[in-house]
Image (tube, rainbow, N blue to C red; front, side, top):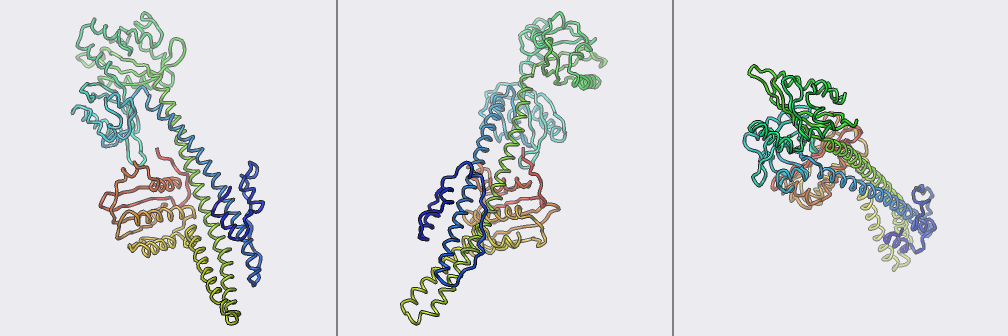
Length: 578
């Protein structure tokens, strides 16, 4: 693989033909590419004469250039692996979102303040609003006032409880139509560490209309509706035996109407899956004992042909004047497809989380490898080229002392060469510093102090480091991540913030290291910046997450910016956010 910059350096040394090893690197084979050649140390001594030194300088530079090509190929191989992993991740995400959007029920993620954070296409269709217009809107906007109050109590129960919470609410579509939905919700911790509610919305308008018709209309009218609904209807008497079953109910389990009529509750329980039977029986008995008006439950039940189906029942209990059980009307819905879709989605979600974590690990590995290569190259450049150039400068100075008086024209030439060598020495020092500041080898605190001094010197903006503890013990990987984040934050402040003061807070909090970079500049809108797809803040966040830490940006236009992170002092397995 050819590199124009490296080739031009070869030509400058008077040899445009690369050595055999370099030619092999230019066209790597499958057998040679994965192997990493050992970097040769240059322990040879150097003669004091200019001619011998020049020969040693060219050989050392060729070896350094060869090593640079090897490192470049290795990094390109790692980048190719990252691209393949990213492509697989994109494919998994596409399958995940297809399954999410095409689900037969609505899925939504809502904040503790009722704001819709995520919603699938089914939810948008239920509400009659484009999905883009739903995000950021309060869910209670689509509810009458009484149902909004019920939702508030329901959401509080979901947030403080650990089990799935259920309720039924009335929603109003954008065109004014009213629909009833069954909500099932559970609290979850979002990406930013805040509590959110994930919920399933099932359209039960037909069922509610049926129930209302059963109450308000005659038996004939009730049968007309029941016989034509897709949900199964079963009515129990006071003796807990079946009095009526609808055609849809008969179709769900494969038994005839005659077989279903007069079945006892015990006979029905016998068909329920053993793992669900006892819990369902206890749930129903508790509801009746508490004179509950309705109960929503899901369970597995055996079909006549032997296979198992999932069903969701909504029972409406009736009581006599003394409060004794008098019967029930149960609306049964086959939710087998929904359960299968949810199981597939859970598996896809797990695979997606694993893929994201693998990608984070690869990126972290690439960052670590890159930092190691930078450190190695910086030392090679500083030690090898720096020593050669220093020796060359000393010989030039000696030549000036010995020969300048005898050959007057030689003095100007030697002084010019000496100036060029000085520029080369400065260039080598700058390259080594940009690759890996020497201050990092002296500890994180020293490196951050150096960053502050450099920032103040070149930007005329005050930068101060506060709260640091010289005794903080932290490994090199964490030190490099913190250093690079501060370095990038200061670069962004210099470019965009127009700040007059920057404060960096570094302190230990129990087993974690806390860092804050605070400026009094222009500030910005983090949401707008994230939507533009810029990689700066995203790269910072991913670096911190890869180390098991937490990352936050707080900024408001005109009020400055705070970049904060917490990283465990000891290595731990990074946890992927939901």
